[in-house]
Image (cartoon, rainbow, N blue to C red; front, side, top):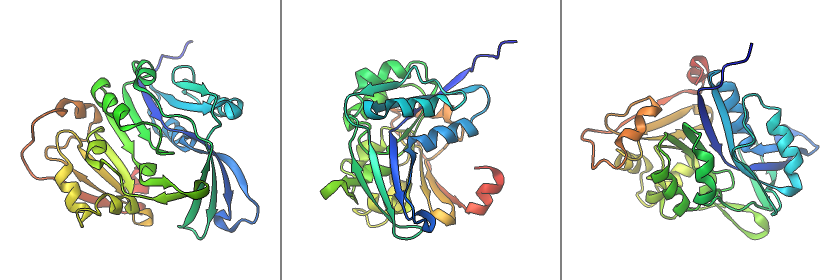
Length: 275
């Protein structure tokens, strides 16, 4: 009996990264493995209901095309035909050196080019929702993100991550404030960042939580902040709806009256309820 065709498709946009990891968990020998969007692809396959399919939207350097394709093809319910593009540039490689459990240095070499909207739009036509993870920070330009906002009708969720990282000498990734942060935030229905990135976002305001309460609304509905072992916190706009498929309805609205909401969840509670 033929399996039923998946009824919904999640686009997962990011960068496949070949990691070389030093001193993780005290190990003396370096570990090499796929990182970057590979984690998100595996997590999406594990978390999504059985009637969903995952569509990777990734550019892969030809130097690592075969192992990247092999990795993605080993994941169930992953369509590698629609949105995987091979490019002549060397693939992203990152050297991670852990100082301790929570601190590390990161050096980038190689790098695939960002998506153009003319490249991305055809691959998105079959997607019902989109998750963007800025693994390198160069996946999309702001202009392409704006085109994505106006051209894709499904809900969008973005982990802004490496938009807060510049590239210094020798490829060293260094924290930076996000230029044009307001324009970036308006490109997505919901965004996620960690606590250090959130502090960078709110530096010009002095209080990132005050900034978050001001910017959520009809366009950006939700800001989620991961807090490590302390769990996560969030700020949502007035009349926030938890169903992502309700999010596109308020895009481009003039305003929604009411106060923003905020909350948090400890890590142990989140693990119990399966978040």
